[in-house]
Image 1 (cartoon, helix red, strand yellow):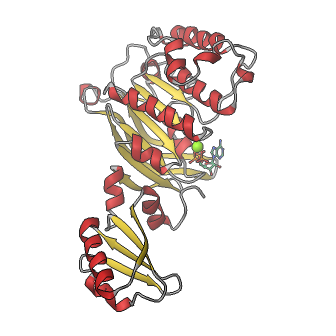
Image 2 (cartoon, protein in one colour; image 1 turned 90 degrees about the vertical axis):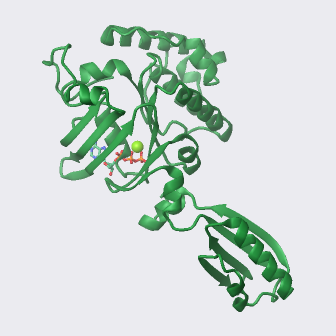
Image 3 (cartoon, rainbow, N blue to C red; image 1 turned 45 degrees about the vertical axis):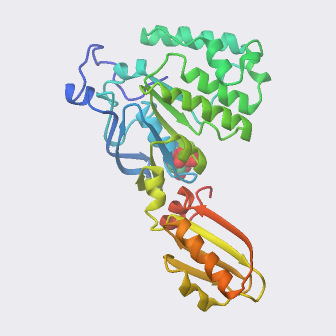
Length: 339
Ligand SMILES: Nc1ncnc2c1ncn2[C@@H]1O[C@H](COP(=O)(O)OP(=O)(O)OP(=O)(O)O)[C@@H](O)[C@H]1O
Ligand SMILES: [Mg+2]
């Protein structure tokens, strides 16, 4: 990993910037009012957050939100325009030499030596990293490849791998030194559904150890909801929402959205008064669909069934869904998260 933050004069025995208070604190990362400007373009506009040690922290947002720029500053790959980032108690702008041995980075896009085999490439990175950091690698390449479904590709040249296989290889390379802090920039974006689930299971295994801090960016709601303890949603370089995935979904005010298809012409809108627990009811006359929002799905369902029975309005189909992170994003920006 390169470091453009200009810290070559820092002695290798430099102390954590905030003394023991940060080193021993429960936070692996502290980001304070960080900005990134590319010339006149303001890509990250004063972002502050903390990441608990041993947690998985998700950064979501549409294309161009500033996710990769933020990660690149945390990784020491690009200079921080202003603000401060502390990783494991060390200042990312001046103490990257102390941080680097403890972090693994999977970039959003990678270029590898395509003429090397997977085994040769992993061996190259292992030696290179050990020379730079002095830290010995612990997980074996075979173990990593096995976990990522690439064991049979050990003797394949890198240019013989598919896009998704290369993406999984980049995760293996990020983990070669058994890092404490792992950055994954859209780790599953090029993967088919099966490989995506395989990779999620691998990340879940990493989480089980309890001592890895994972920061990942994603466009996938289900990925964030499944893997992340906390998420942050970015748009236009700013944080628009942050919290536990389930709490964010709850912040919309309703937990469940129930859609009921009624037999044509049998339901009358005045019947909604019987669904007392609903926070809102919306009747689509054209489609004969009633949309009920309610905190307690079981109570609302029982009231809907009573209304249906009493009125003789037969139910054709019922669909119950929870508010998702996608809803949170839509409600804050009016934009689809994948736009
Ligand atoms: N080196 C650069 N020079 C100029 N502008 C840049 C540079 N890198 C990124 N940007 C701009 O900064 C903004 C944020 O880009 P960034 O890559 O951080 O977004 P992102 O949230 O990671 O998007 P994506 O989901 O597409 O990966 C974009 O508008 C992008 O064009
Ligand atoms: Mg990106």
